[in-house]
Image (cartoon, rainbow, N blue to C red):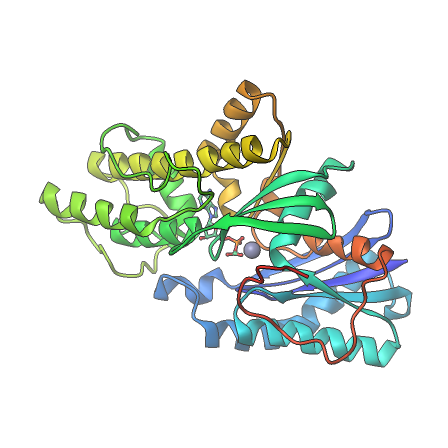
Amino acid sequence: MNILTLETTCDETAAAIVNDRLDVLASVVASQDQLHQRFGGVVPEIASRAHLERILPVVDETLRKAGLPLSEIGAVAVANTPGLAGSLLVGLAAAKALCVARQIPLIAVNHLQAHIYACRVAAQRDVFPCIGLIVSGGHSSLYRCRGPVDFEFLGGTIDDAAGEAFDKVAAMLGLPYPGGPSISRAAEQGNPKAFAFPRAFLREDRLDFSFSGLKTAVRYAIEKSGEKIAGSGKAQAQTSLPSPLSPLHCDLAASFQEAVVDCLVGKAMAALRQTGMKNLCVGGGVAANARLRERLHEESGRNGVELQIAPTRLCTDNAVMGAIAVERWKAGLTEDLDLDVYPGVLRKPH
Ligand code: KG4
Ligand code: ZN
């Protein structure tokens, strides 16, 4: 049985074909980074229009790469929550059309659960039960994952997501979008202790995150330094880092990154302690961050935690992680054609 999975939740148009043994037969990701770069963030209307133009060519390319005709596809899976409403609708409409045309089942995928499932696909062995940490441009959340179709929300950001904070701080520093890789590269040359930025809730039991105070603290530090940062606050059209980077840039980037990493690692370890679980799976775009990966390995080693981090290529949005649909299909969880999109995070996820 082959499943075609579609992913259009934000600004990546992606499709993949996986079989019920979780072999990945093909994967295609059409990134829209260049379209959004000059705005310093994703513009929802541009994203949905681009998905509309790309979704069918991406599906065709995926079938071509897998060397399969459409008749060999046994079900279509689509991420229908959470995400940008217009973007989600394009993927869902395409999935439904394929299901009607081929008379095959439709499977709903929760994008956040799929980010965690990227760890399962890469590990090629069971990773459940586990604590799931999702850190992306839109979300920073912790889940208790009892099994691949049984997720319980434990906590999340009360304001900005970690990736959003990376993107906004990069814009303040005049660094190119997406901000995560830019900050990470600037941080390599900086001192993470140069600025004592806040770490919200770190000393409390609650499993939540907040990054807006940290963002403001970076803004004040820039103002206090008196240094004029070229392009600060404006979206950057360029793709490479300014050269040379000022020491202030690098110190701010390193200190900001360290504060985010402390919060993410601290809360993930707290979730493991509070639930008594010993497995941690981490996914989402920010999980590509080298410093976060390093600190997760250190703390997991120290606390006897078995750690899986999605490989970098499966951290940012892709359709391979939609392989979680295999689990839903095996559990008999297919959908009617009146399935809708849910842009917000479902506290009781499907
Ligand atoms: O998971 P993703 O592709 O999209 C969402 O579902 O949101 O995550 C995109 C986010 C962006 O905010 C980007 O800045 C961040 O992931 N990101 C990183 C790194 N690479 C991408 N953040 C920190 N360090 C990185 N190396
Ligand atoms: Zn994502």
